[in-house]
Image (cartoon, rainbow, N blue to C red; front, side):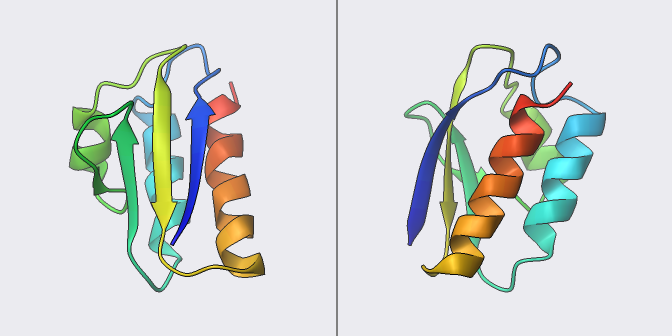
Length: 87
């Protein structure tokens, strides 16, 4: 399992539009993708309600786990981190 810790730089955090983009990108992966706020309980990154329920705000740390390893997992982690940091 590939993992990345990301400090969210988006001014609005993972709310509404960024959360929808995050879920859309995660949903394209074949395996399990989870996201947790800090050391909290991971939730499915493919569920908009679960992601928005984390209440991730600017400056919060998230932990993203992607099933599998290698270039595909790294590319997905890069994309999810990019979304978390975009405005």
